[in-house]
Length: 194
Image 1 (cartoon, helix red, strand yellow):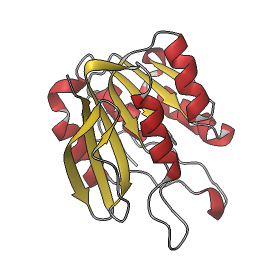
Image 2 (cartoon, one colour; image 1 turned 90 degrees about the horizontal axis):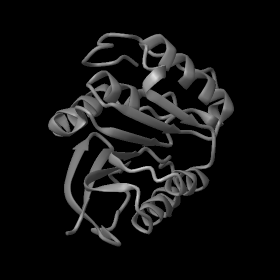
Image 3 (tube, one colour; image 1 turned 90 degrees about the vertical axis):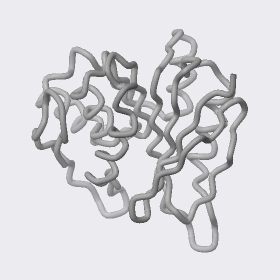
Image 4 (cartoon, rainbow, N blue to C red; image 1 turned 135 degrees about the vertical axis):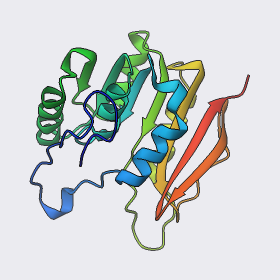
């Protein structure tokens, strides 16, 4: 995993040794590059929220490309330690906050603190049991975000999911305006309907 572009371009990111049952599924370089090409104009100066952040690859890419702040939410302490190391390696610790919390608790804390974001990225795990479609974590997170005010009025929410998963066309006032597919990974883009 490397930072693709911007201030920390080419910087290799650390990845923790984890048991097979806890392995992360980082966004591929191709999908990450495409994501930031789509978001090109929105990233500069943006406040970026990276949910289910893992080692921080997506939020760090945003910081490298000029985001003013990134907040990372990841519940696993070992992974959070690696995320903090990656922020140190890239020199972005001063523009980042890390919450070692369950995503649903974290977004309530963020809302109470008045946090508002231009870009919200949801990288929820999407390995689902056989015969079941969809990611309960993604569905729950989309519904939770749609029910509170943490996305700026012109902000965008990106949901990463498997091509086998069906996501809704809208969650509350958030309405899907674009899908982009990269192998099995799909990025669904949502904005608030005005």
